[in-house]
Image 1 (tube, rainbow, N blue to C red):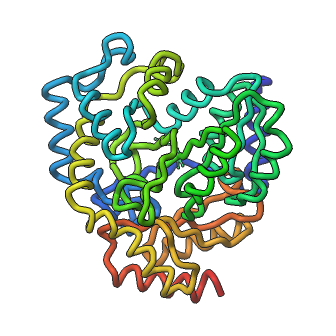
Image 2 (image 1 turned 180 degrees about the horizontal axis):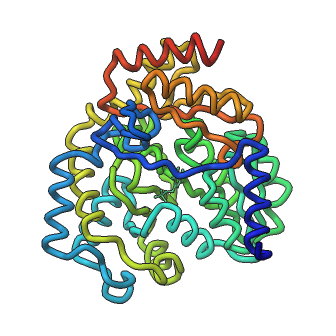
Amino acid sequence: MSSLDRFAQDKIDGLKRRHLHRQLTETLREDGIWVERGGRRLMSFSCNDYLNLSQHPAIKQAAMNAVEKYGAGSGASRLVTGNHPLYAELEARLAAIKQTEAAVVFGSGYLANAGIIPVLVGAKDLVLADELAHACLFAGAQLSRGKVLTFRHNDLDHLRLLMAEHRAFYEHVLIVTDGVFSMDGDLAPLAQLNDVANEFDAWLMSDDAHGLGVVGGGRGSTFVGNSHTPVPLQMGTLSKAVGAYGGYLCASAPVIDLIRNRARTLIYSTGLPPSCVAATIAALDLIEREPGYAALPVQKAQAFTRRARLPDAQSPIVPVIIGAEEATLAASQMLADEGYLAAAIRPPTVPAGTARLRLTFTAQHPDDAIDRLADIVRERVLN
Ligand SMILES: Cc1ncc(COP(=O)(O)O)c(C=O)c1O
């Protein structure tokens, strides 16, 4: 065996010993909620397609029309010739939804975070990240060459303490957080985080990957409650409730201009296929037109948490924390035997000792299936 293969095999063996080895499982998504895996038909509670829009006829048709009109791919970076005519419409729509001056669309949410943070943060600067923020916010922070510190999850006192200790030693400070936490489903206290940022002359960036389309009347986490929190850097993805693909940043006109000029993941990566951009525009149309539909995933999640006797859901994401990896895999398998797909999420995606089933609820999940799932989880997982 070559040293390269030996290296890889040793790493894999270690992952297997710790029940952390992962495999790609072929999954055929039939419609909004049903999937086929290994010859079995399962009802999925593990997709981020919260509004089932990836399968919506009008949205698929918009994507097909764009393929006919503009082709399958964009052909180059947006800064060369890949900036097809649909981009301007989408960016104007996103800025209007988020009430910012401008927006810029990236190839994905991960690319957005990996590109935005290094433009704003350099070696003399500090990033303060919520400890449960998404991996790609940390990836962007690490690429920035700034100092990175974490504050305890949603803990404003800890954030203030770190600010008081460190603010004076850095030129700029960027606070980063998920708006809706991807593995826990809870919300960040964005209004209070914005106050702390303003008090210490820091900048707040929120990642609304799991908020757009499903909380705040469909406009996302900066619109939860009766007021709007003017977070200056509102990032998100088009791959979850929107049902397509791509990432974005909504911010002021100068910030967006700077990002377009300096973000390496925008400049040195090919533009999105026109079909993705067209599907997104059609999905945003639907989300804006039907706020009642956009509210359904959270309502379904809340029906589940009430019946399973779990804390009230704040988003379509409900964690069922089990702890040990092996037990979590066994619970996922038991639910598959009952006809449900509920993926086991293990470290390093979540902190050690908090392996879980991460359940996601969508607009089209039938109420009786949710009730039955809640009963099984209460009696056979949480007991
Ligand atoms: C909070 C959060 N941010 C960013 C991303 C990355 O987005 P994308 O899938 O568009 O790369 C995800 C998706 O996994 C996420 O959950």
